[in-house]
Length: 63
Image (cartoon, rainbow, N blue to C red; front, side, top):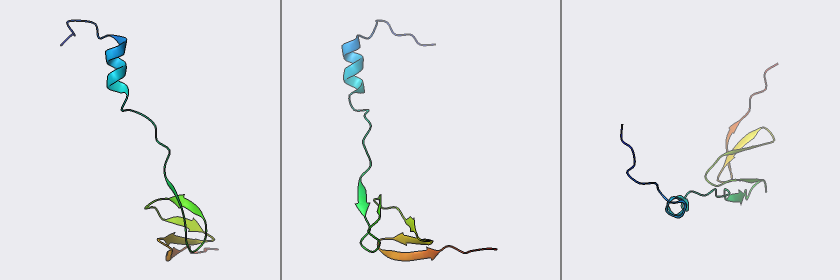
C-alpha cells in the first residue's frame, strides 16, 4: 500500500478543503399557491402535486 513520504501540513490540508462547504438550498415561492419549495422540484399542497405553477397530479383518497 502507498504511504505518503512526508507529513502534509495543516495549512496545505486546509487549503485543499476550502472548496468543500455546505450551501443552503435556494427556496422559490410558487406563483399559484404561494408555498415555498425547492427550485426545480414538485411540491404537494392540499392533496395536489404542483410543478411550475401547474397541477401535475392529484392524490387519490382510498377508504
